[in-house]
Image (cartoon, rainbow, N blue to C red):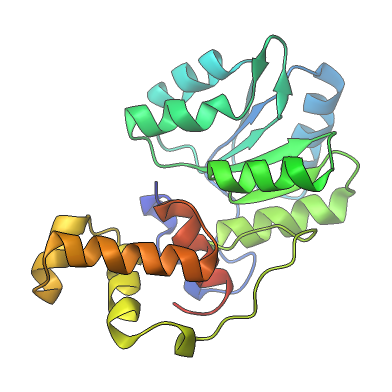
Amino acid sequence: MDTRTADNADCALLSPGDCLPLARVLIVDDHPFFLFGITAILEQENLAREVATVASVADAVDDLRSRPETSLVLLDLTLQGEAGLSLFSELEQIGLPVSVVVISSREDEASVRAARSAGAVGFLPKSAGRRSLVRMVQRVSNGLLFYPSLPFPSLSPEHLTPRQLEVLTLLADGLPNKRICQALDLTEHTVKTHLKAIFTHLDVHNRTECVAQARALGLL
């Protein structure tokens, strides 16, 4: 999944806030008071034109199927009777590109890393304040990751070969492997080898996380 919707595909080139308000934000949480509070902040800060709420992964999938223009999902880790991270596999199966930020009362490093590995573009503890929420939405709306509690490796373009940078650029443009092969006149095996090396360099696990991490590090 790409980290951005088609409507804000150029936003990573802009300053924080230039892509706001988001067209639509979906909150997946089963705590009414939390839903009320975060909805109010998103509306008061003009971060989203529309905010919707659901209480389960199944309802979230149904909502996103009917409203694919959704720009951002705010997902609780622990929902009644199910794990919030299961949403990522559901989105992968239906091929729906939408950015997801995990918002949880759990703040341990294992939970944060689990969210990142699943494909979340950010993690915000529920104990965070209003400013942190605003800053998070500003960053992810510009195609950047939001993991303030995790150290990221200090990387530069020199850590990737020129060919790997070409593959990374085409990956960020949304090209599938076959199109990358055609553009660079490479075999599919070679492209997969380059992608594996890029993922290792950036310490990521999927294409969505790779593109978001590369932008956050200034490689794109």
